[in-house]
Length: 464
Ligand SMILES: [Zn+2]
Image (cartoon, rainbow, N blue to C red; front, side):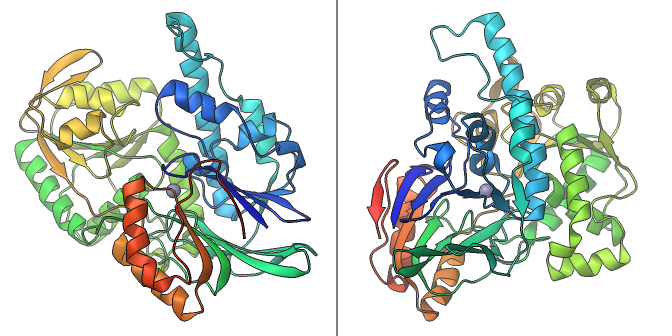
C-alpha cells in the first residue's frame, strides 16, 4: 500500500492524502490551500491524484481546508462517490456555494483592477461545479462498518471538532492481506460545548493524525461564559457596542449556544444581539437540525428548549442594507459577524464604526493569524488600517481563548494513550501542522507509538 501526502503536509491547509493499494485508489479529503494568492492558486489548480481514476473520496469534515477543492476535483473529471456524514454533506454544500461566490467576486475585482502579473483571475470552479460535486456525496452514519466493496470497508467516528466531523477508519484489501488505516481529520477537544468528545479507535496499521496545536495547551472552555456576562453588563452600563468577529461555521453557533443558555438562566442583561452574516444564518439552521448528534448536555437541553441557538432579542440580518443600518443605531447592542480574523466580510464595517469609541468592546474569540487585522487587535496596536483608512484603537479589546476546535497537547496525549492501550498504530504520520507543532506533538506522543512518528513533506510517498 502506498500513501502520498498531497497537502496539509508541513502546513495547515489543503488537506489531501492519497492511498493506493493494488486494487484501489482513494483520496482522503480534498481541501483548499489558503495563503498567498499566487502560491495557493498554483497548489489548488493542479491535481496530482489523477482524479478520473480515483475509486472514492472520504471527507472528514466540512471546513474549507478539507472540502474546499472537491468542486475542483469534479471539474477535473472525478465522478465517483464522496463518503462523509450527513451533517458534513449538508454543511459542505453551504460552504462550497459560499466559496464559489467568493471566488467569483474576487475574479470580478481582479479583472477590473488587474492582476499585476499575478495568477489567472478566473475562479477555480463555478457554482455549476459545486452542484455537480454535491450530487456525489454519499452520506454514511457514525460507528457502523459500511462495506463499500469487497476491497473496502469504511467506519466513521465522531472527531468532536465541528458538527458532523469524523475520524475515518478504513479496512482495505492490499494484496493477500487487509490493512487498517485511521485518519483523524481534525481532532477536537474534550469538554467542548455542543460537541461530543473525540471518540477512540482500535489498533491500526497506519495512523494519519493532524497536529495543528501539538505545541499548545488551551485554557479551559468554562471561563468564556463568565467573560460574556461581564462584557454584556459593561456594555449595558456604558451603552456601548460589542463586536464579535466570528467564523460562520462553529464559533458563531458556540457563542449563540452560550448566550442562549445564559438568557435561559436569566444571567444576561437584555441587549439586542445581531448575527450579521447570511452564511451564519444558513449554517445555524443546519445545526438546529442535528441536535441528535451533539453531546449529552446539548441533547438534554434540547428537550426543554426547542431552539438551542435562539433567544428573545436575537436577530439574524440578511441584506447589506440591514447591516448598514446598525451603523446609526444608538445604545448598547452586540454584533456577531464574519470573518473571524477580520480580514474580510461585514465585520470590517462594524469595526470601522466601533473602534474609535472607548465605550465599545471588540471580543476576539479565535486564533488570529499573523498579518491579519485580528492579530493587530490582539496585539493592541494603537492604530489600525481598515479599508485604507487609519483608525485609533480606543475600544476595549477582549481576547477569549477557550474556544479552539482543535485538540491541544493534553488532548492528543489522552487520545494516543488510549490508542496505545488498544495496540497502537504501526506507522504514525503527523500532518496538518506547522513543522514546530508537528515536532512537538511527535515528542508528546512518542511513547504511545509503535514506531517513531513521521512528519511527511508535501508530495512525499511511503510504502507501508
Ligand atoms: Zn477543521
